[in-house]
View (cartoon, rainbow, N blue to C red):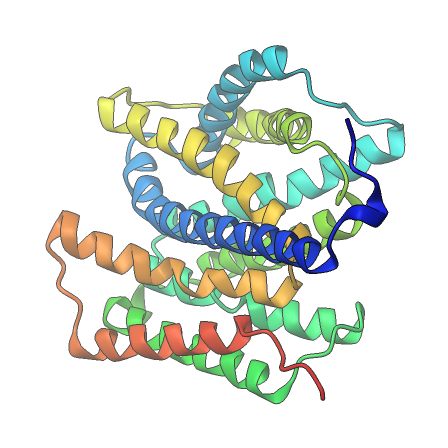
Length: 314
């Protein structure tokens, strides 16, 4: 039997709403840290994978495995599918930007010789582009502490990866590739938020994987000859990137975008190079310098400033 609305104590209702809000906040925090750890680990998984297959070929295998993994899940969960051709088109565009173009650019930048440190540094500037775009186009206001946080975050990332930067290894082609990647992930994140905010993320993932596969497979065959050296590390890197990154981490990012401010969410990208450096220290014995330790502290301070909610006016 339902309870009449008039019989509910307002204080009890407020308490319930507060508890629900607290639960949502904790869930978003867990999603954010999951995204940071997995996305940062992805630099190492990619570093391993492209040793056995060139970037377009590696990504083709990655999305082929992704489609195979998604089909049983979608058959059991029966998600909602796009209600119109326009919605389907928007899902495809967002997917090509965030998957095919973004990852194709960043993978080829490393394949052409640019260091992982420079790739991480350049891609970590995404919150700057997001902040400017959101401020000028979406009319989302950033307060001075948040702008300071954006600057501190970028400065901290520069310190963290500075010991890995090898300027002589940078070519115009690799810089162009990582620049395309940066533009694609920034545009794709905002495009998804603007035009695909209400789509079912399960069906959208499949559509985006297939769209990316249809673009990357011909490139892998014609440009790279689809040469693969089948080894266990290649398979492990593909499974890691498919299940934990492309499926779970990307959907976590989209959920966070739905729940929060565009610039605050994308400020999480500042932390991914830090995770990559720490894991590289653990896995490959590359010890971060004292300059990197300072950079980690500066970056965390910058992220805290960007993510801090504005004070309520009294």
